[in-house]
Image (tube, rainbow, N blue to C red; front, side):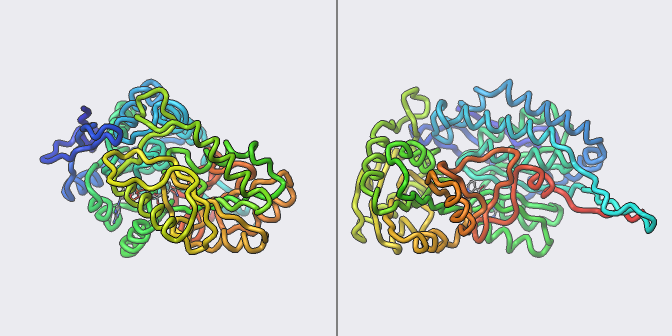
Length: 468
Ligand code: NAD
């Protein structure tokens, strides 16, 4: 059983109360995390604000060096962090599970450490010189979800500190342990107060988003929570980066080979058990190959093993929490009640575990709730189409706009259709691939702003222009 403290101002913060963190595979106690209060939040923000002048006053090269040392630390504790993550999140150690997630966190940390912060000369002539500089914002509040908790915390924290801000991070109460340990490790190499952790319930996140001394909130989570954060950040006009929900469509054109695309489509949808913002959540397949694609997906899905993340044979773990399990179960049930056809898996009666069978559903109803809503779990609706304009309209007929994919060997058709899709990323013959040097973000209700790349880094800064 793990037990970690919050780190505030470089020291452990004692807590009067704690809460249980449950292993979703076994229902055993994975660990305990401190239940921070609003007074603790004030203390964490004050510690971050106190660290800000010295940290923002360092040279870029010094901060780059610190960020590389953070990456080194994470590398040294790669397996330890992965084990904590599996015990609270449930995902397998191997495959695209915990070792992969910590590896991603290290890669993102290194990439951001190495980035340069530009000074742009906008004018240099007889009328004078104008320079555009990037200044840190101050204290950044980072609020993270339970699906990829460590990697997402690194996505928030490293660009923020690289650009000279200091951070208070609040992890999801479902998966706080790996983040607590990671921030403890960061504090072994960073100056006191640069990165602070605060675990607690959702009210702590709400208090952060209205806190007068926090200059920016970077939030990854659901759209309804993002909307609340945006509203409560209005009074203090906080800068916001909001990475929210997705209901990504994948469109399979008639020239595809069903057997060849099945593994890529499957993992695009079922990575992390579907608990991924930019997973493929609605699959539209041309009539002419619809039955073959369904058959190939069923055949491939039958080779995948769902089980305890510490079992080497498991490809996928449990759904992380009961609330999410019930949501997926409900959407699958509602879809079948509306007349869709079950190809594999299906709803679970009286579940006493959080393991959900991989579920594939054939549906042709645009009003199917499994099509309309983000399921965020291992259930994929497969919808036939015959008309390309109608399928683009269907893909766009959703409040979300995170990602999308088009499956075809015709590069030109990919480009034409991709430009008509209302989403932040469009993938060709794959779905959900992200990388640290490429901006990532959603349109419509999937978010505000981007992370990754230079654009993501600079989202942690304000512009200051010097007229010389
Ligand atoms: P969630 O919105 O329930 O919780 C996320 C975080 O917000 C948690 O730390 C929670 O404690 C906190 N929180 C809850 N209420 C709050 C409030 N009123 N004010 C401030 N903070 C509050 O989301 P979740 O269930 O943890 O994550 C799943 C969702 O996240 C899915 O919709 C998924 O698509 C989305 N997501 C998006 C991305 C992306 O990059 N776009 C990445 C991962 C997950």
